[in-house]
Image (cartoon, rainbow, N blue to C red; front, side):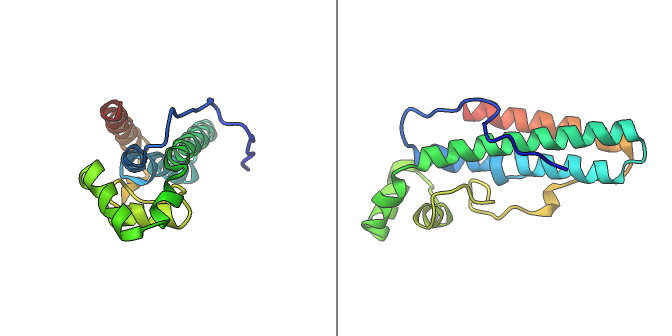
Length: 162
């Protein structure tokens, strides 16, 4: 059972809207090294675990990863605030301006802003999240090592985003 605490684990603020940064943060939301992949990985490993202690630990970690997903998603929404209206005024012109300012912006992110400004389950290139990002084999030692490597990869992406 999951219980949702209606407060974020950490208070998050952004100084100003920045759709380009929001787009980059999608990597940590719906990308291969992102929080959704991590939560899914720990959750599926917990379901297959026979040892009650390890199962509880994996479920706790999966729940923690979901809280990270909520934080990253909230930041993405804050960074997109106001972008929906500005882009809707002239979809093509603003889309071209967005791409010019932010380099290689992609149409899927612009479409996402126009139709909700939420955090879509895509990576920063607009590629939809895939269950292929969840690498679980059902052998605790192998899964644990894979988890360590995945956490290291996620940390590297966060460091590059800073």
